Length: 177
Image (cartoon, rainbow, N blue to C red; front, side):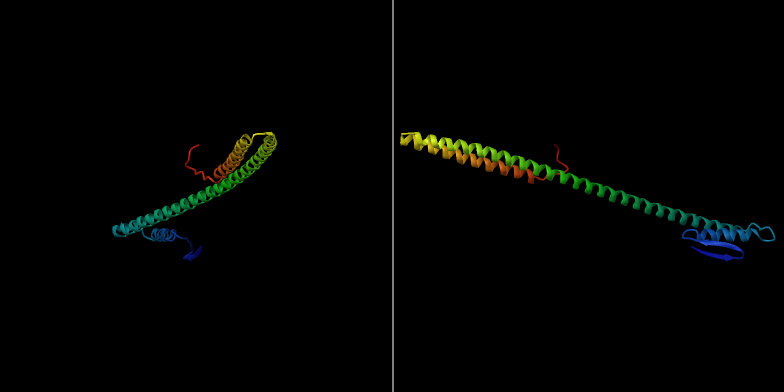
């Protein structure tokens, strides 16, 4: 801001106010004459034209200023919304990872218990297998036990793979539940 003194009057120079103050200063000087002014229509039209231009410039300046303030406010709202989304997503991802880790741990403990029970049952079946006197029955029962072991292990592997597939699934925001 710059101050200029002209014949005892202080003019304050700011963007958008300088022309207005010059016009006001000129009008004040015009009114201070010793003799009352004669209606000089050319001067009046010129002054009114300058005033109209000054008003237009003032409105343009205010419109640009408001537009800039609106853009700034919108940008700030976008930044705050993005920050909230990032923080919310981070929190949700943390909870999701904890949930899947705990669930995976529980699932593996259950599978281990199932395997232990299945293997204990297999030991009993193999002991019983030795008691069969017929080689044909023993062979058929042994094949049946081996198929049961293969089926159990394949099922266990399949369940683990399906759980991994659930964990790695990407769920978008546009999907409905």
